[in-house]
Structure formats: structure tokens, C-alpha cells
Length: 377
Image (cartoon, rainbow, N blue to C red):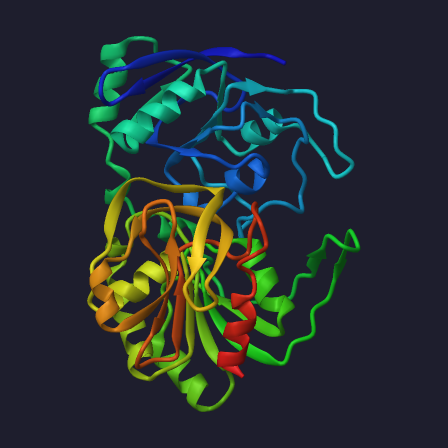
């Protein structure tokens, strides 16, 4: 495997020398860490990581290669800036693998950085919060890299949704994957919903389909009046608001359209960014966490059943406690007490901050898709 020297420059002036195994060049972005032990391909291809470099806490990455089926991006294009790992394994071995991770990164212009003390970077983020960095295989001068970083926009100033969201309305009729059968099967539909794509993951669509919801996927520039008309004509039974990257408050036009859907009391379900947009549409401002939640081992208490669910997470924004004025808190994060789920009091609306579709991650929270199906039906 051919490697190059790469340099990571942090906005506090720290500089780290490493090796590159992915795309060459110079890129800026926000650095966060992910604690998942498996599923690096699903993480890499999750559109919610647009604009970010992911530091993997799992030290060995690349062992199982990549394949076409585990890409989470609806457009099949990954949008993360890059990944930072301790050890990259160029030799991969898995019966589903179709190519090695390095070649996949190069094909998609994503940086892959290895031979890094990822424990140091993770602890730095934990103590100082998510931080902006520049990664380069072209420049080694700290001053040059500092100038590049300072002249680049921050992630909260960029609307990544316009590039990620689908440009056309489409029916999602893909098969769902069964780990029990190690095969793909066609779901049976009994109700139709509109899915608003802010960067939706494939497995969310799979889970919605698996419970019997036929999904019609629309882009972020959707028309609330069209959806309302179709709901009143009983063509559709509800609306799903997807996950996605960046600061939710930047989506001013989308929030205004969601307000109109709320007023009509259309059944809605939001995950991650969708959860945050529902909060903003109700008039409750979101806020940025220090380093967010990124991993597949986060304990969340289901306040309705009194059970603890181990969940998959990927977000850096959260909804405020003041939203309890209009919504019941259904789920709470047991790491920091932040709100993980809501059921609105005067509307048929539910939302989750974590990822019940579990890709990667445990399946304990997936039952909420059946709850949404019951609301729609």
C-alpha cells in the first residue's frame, strides 16, 4: 500500500504528523470522535458526518473492507471529510467485502489518516470540545496550515443539506436486510408516508419499510401545502423528518414549512436532525453540546417503559429542557441527562435524538418504528 506523510493542524496550534491512506490534498472540517467498535463503513457513509473528520476509538480499522450493501447514504455518496485511525489494515477479509477501505476513500475523495495517537485526540476533544482542524498531504508548514484553517468557514456556517438532500421525489422500494436469514426480503406495505430527506440513512428507510410503511422520499425543499393536500385526501398517513448534518437553525425555510405541518396535526416522526427541527418549529432553540454523542454504546432510559436501551448516536446539537412545557420527555440520556426522545402533548408527533435504526449499533430502540406505524394507521 502506498502511503504519504500527512499533517493534522488543530485550531489551538497543536500539529500532528501522520500517514495518509486515503485521498490526497488539503481539507478543513470539525473533528469529533466515535466510540463504536464495529460499523466503520456505516459511520463513514452516514450523511450526518458531512463536514467532519471522525476519530475512531477502535484502534484497528479496515479489517472487513467495504461493500455496496452497507453504504448508509441514500445517494450512495459519502460526505464526511475524512477518518483518523490508529492502525489501518490494508488486507481485508470478509465474505461480503468487495474492495479495501483505502481504495474506497480515494474513489470518493475522502481522506484517511493513520499512525495517529487517537487516544490523545479523543481525550483532547473530550476536554476541549469538538475542534476545527485542517489535514494536508500537500503542506507541512504550521503557518500555512493555520492560514488555511482561519480563512475557512466553520461547520455551523455551512448548509450541507442542499448538497446532500435528494433532488427528486422517489419511491423507496428497496429490500430490507435480514440478519436471521442473511438475505434480503421485500416488505409488505399497508400505509404510505412522506419522508423528508435532510441526509437520510438507508437503514432508517429499511426500518420504516419493514413495519409496513411505503416511503416516498422528498428533498429538503418540500412543499407543505402539497403534503397537507395529500394528507387530507388520505393519500398519505404521515411525515418522517430525517437525520442530517450541521446546525439545524440554519434551515430557516424548512422550519417554516414544518410549522405548517404541525398546525394541521399531521402525524410526524423525527430522528436526530428531524428531532431538532421539530423543537425549533415549536419555538424552542437548540444548543450545541461540547463534543456531542457519537457511538453505539450510549445508555438511554425509556421513561415510558422504565427500561434502559443501549443506543446508536451521532449528533452534536440538543433540544432544551424548556420544551417540557409542550412535550413529554420519553427518553433520557444516562451519560449527561440530555433529552433523547419527545412525545408532543397537543400533536400526534414523536421524535428521537438517537438512531433506533442501529446502523451500526444495537437494535433495542427499533420498536419505535412500530409505534409510528400505529400513529399513522
